[in-house]
Length: 359
Image 1 (cartoon, rainbow, N blue to C red):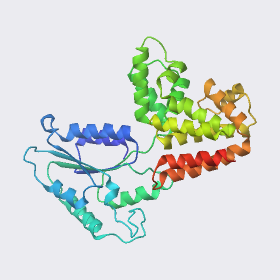
Image 2 (image 1 turned 180 degrees about the vertical axis):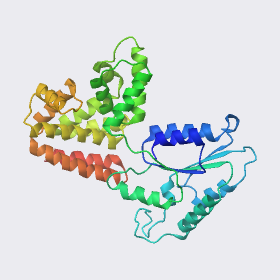
Image 3 (image 1 turned 30 degrees about the vertical axis):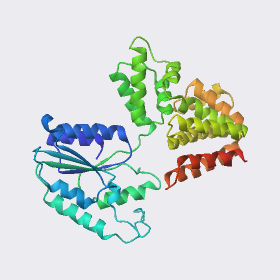
C-alpha cells in the first residue's frame, strides 16, 4: 500500500498487529511512523510503550521474544524494528543477498517464529519491520523482493520509493502553499532539482525560504541559490567544468570540498548524471545557445530556467557529444560501484575523476 493508504487505514480502522515498511524514502516514512505512534499509543504511554530494535544487532528470535513479553509500565506497545533485511537467510558467502544459497538455521527459526506470532499476535502490541536499505529499481529490485517474500506473512506492507520529479514537484507545491510561499513553477523546479528530489531536503529548503521571505515577497532564483546548499548547484557544475577541461587537480579539490561539506556522494553523482543527460539531449538536437536550450526543453514540457540552460550550454562547450556519451558510461559504472559493498564512497568518486581526466 502507499503511505496515503496507510494513513487513511489507521485513521479509520486503527493499527494492525504488524507492518512492513519497504523503501528508502524517509520523509513519508517518518510521517507514517509519527501517525502510527499517535494511533497505537496513548499520550501517557508514548515514552514507556515505544521500543526500538535493530536486526543488525539482535536476531529476529530475540526481537520476537521481546514482542511476546508483557510490559509492566504500558498497556500498549509499539515495537519499531530497523534493518529488517538483516534477518534474511544468509548464503555461504555471508552476504545475505544471494537467494540461491542455503539458509542458516538461525534465519529459518526466525522466520518460523514470525509466522507463529502472526497467527496469534500479542494483544495491544504493534510491530513495524523497516527495510530502508533497498530501492525498487535496478539491482535493488531483486533484493527488496527477497525481503518482501521473507516477511510475506505480514499482510500490511507499505512502500516508500524514491520520489520521481513529478511527485517531488507536487510535494514541493503543496508544502509551499502550506507555508504561504509565493514561488513560481520554474523556481520550484529549480529547487527540486537542486536537492535531487529528496523530500526531506525539499521541506528543509522551503522552511528556510519561508523564514527568508516571511511571506512579504515572491521567492526568486537568487533566494534559492543563496539558501540551498551550494554543493548541489555550484560545486557540481564546477566539477563538470573542471572535468571538461581535463583539470584533474581542480576536479579532486572540488570533490574534496563536496565531501567536507557532507554531500551525499550518490546524490551528487545523480545530479551530475542529470546535467550530462540534458546536455546530451541538447547535443543531439543541435542546440548551442542558452536561449535555444531553454525554449527547446520548455516545448517538451520539461522544467527549464535560464541559469540551468546556461549551465547546459557551457557543458556542451566543454564536452563534445562523444565525450558526453563516454562520461555517461563512466557515471553508470560509478553509480553501480557506489551501490556495491565498498570501503568508501570517496574511493569510487576519485577513480571516476581519474578516469575522466585521463582521457
